[in-house]
Image (tube, rainbow, N blue to C red; front, side, top):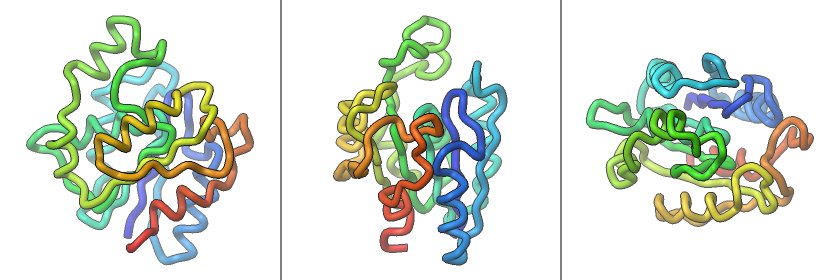
Length: 184
């Protein structure tokens, strides 16, 4: 199996739990990569989606996205020409506008030009998981609940709170590892 980790807005490949998750997966025989997406402070949808799509190497790929990285994955799996992967895990993610980042017209129009077609997106992965912590100061818990509902999966709630970022010292989140490796 091959895992691709996709950081979010203002994120980077060594952020928070990414190095730990990569070590854990590699110790189980997986190959991994953590993408360095262009311009994480002012992200452009087209460049992020292109980079994600180019990194997918086949049906044994598992995509793990954090925050805006989840939305970028959903965009990458949108459309008839989208690749198909084994599994997608959305961590602290969302699939509809609510953040200030997405409230100004230009950014919202770029990242969510139309409502996402979740039925079509679901066809591009064999399985889905959503991990979202209580008391997330950036992406409300209700967004995780809503996203899990769109995929018809039970929301996985970690034993810690927050947005699961570096500043919160979220360096190990076992629930993410379990979501990635369950039944694979």
